[in-house]
Length: 319
Image (cartoon, rainbow, N blue to C red; front, side, top):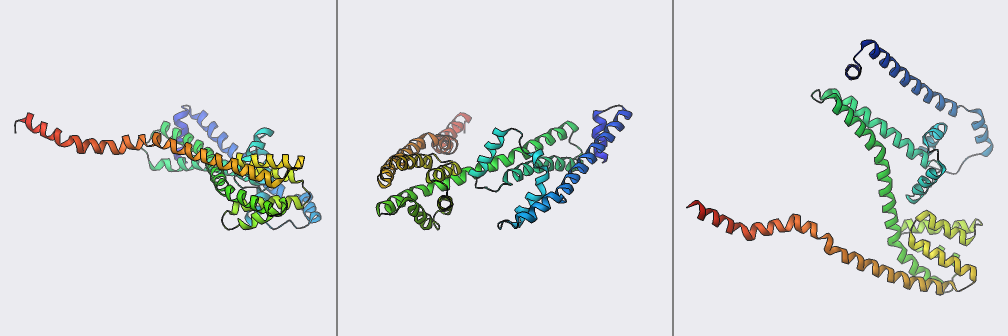
């Protein structure tokens, strides 16, 4: 508290103005805290929500922690979520690509951003009195920097989660494609082939097996095969799967052989994989320049030219 008063004193020279600023800050904090408590209590004790829960009946089994978090954040979800529909749709797509399909996933993500974005600056202000040699301007700079890091870190972690999941799906796609070709050429229909491939890949590629099993469940629930395959492409976000879905949709629409379509796509996909591998191999030479220049060449020059340099120093020094 004393540090906060000193910080406000450095910003406001007049003592009366300082008192007004301090009282206003405390009042605003108490008002925001009370407003949040009021929303949480109103959401938890809403008779309409309790009545609807009793009429609807028990929900499917979910994680108790997730249910609790969703119930707590529901009253304030409209305040922490993006107001623009396109931004909300974009973030929802990212959450699905990361593997979070819960309806409360987007709300939980923005709540984490807000909590971390507030917790880090408060931690900086709490630790500032332990370093009295740090100036007020530096404390303010580190506070703003901590708030920026707290807001950006969840986005970075989400992007890394998306890339890791896409890489795992991409690694399992060639095996799934080969198994689909074998199953369809053996006489299985597309639905049974997808079910068999999902069962076979459950141990080696569980993420892709889960996505294929979800496609089969959607088809059983009455969703069209083309629509279920398009949902698969949207959930994964992979261009390879999107191309396969487009070919299968055309094959189902025009009545051509699914086995022939899968065989042609498998050959094209092998060519793409080979081209991608050749591209990565061609980049190795360029990527090796930096480690060679920073690590290998200094050691090489030290060993090759070092003795000559020492000899020249001895000669010119007259020893």
